Length: 310
Ligand SMILES: [Fe+2]
Image 1 (cartoon, rainbow, N blue to C red):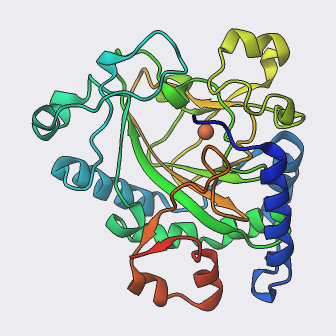
Image 2 (spheres, rainbow, N blue to C red; image 1 turned 135 degrees about the vertical axis):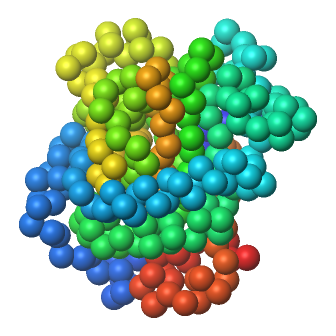
């Protein structure tokens, strides 16, 4: 049976991993950029922050068009779930995939059958993402949060469709239960200016006392949470191309389903150890090419050391 990993076991594992990493000179935290002092405070006090203009629009546009090319090609895109088979129960997230014939007929044929699609092995198929994950401003902020430079544990590159399919899976409120302390970094590949553009939706301050909710449910209804947290704490996080959102997602959050336009995003996980999945077992990590790994300096290699080298 699948059981959410035990909070205290994960906390013990986190503390051991942190202690080990704090001893590594290489992982000494990186000086905070003056413009990010307030961001660190926001992250510590409210659970999230937005770093403005980390990447140039040109770099983001370039990445997005490569992702779009991959979508056109489909070779490196995972076949998504068929949400026409969706049940009423919001905790029911394991669904059959779209049949191959429909999938390979192209995006126009399947975009109204699913919520989103993902790029397989993002660090392999879009190797420029390696530099994104090693960005100094991101590492400086995350290292000041953890107390030392963290490890990249996982990443994904996702396109979420504007369509008539009802919300699904992580579009419902949930808590990430892969570690008791982790950070997720969200990089929108298009401007997200309004709720209709499908922003990351975060319940400010809900990370406090989250242990009480850990493992109780896998998906939560808005109405239930709005009775606990005041509605002013429900924040759709809007940002432009080039901005970076950093959040403690061991807190209530979800992706809002876009109603105006499709939304492309890169999500990076940073932590002190490999993410956990159910039953106190390790989750899969992302793949990276051996040669790309070897070409890095020793700190970068250490940051990427938990990934699978292929
Ligand atoms: Fe999540």
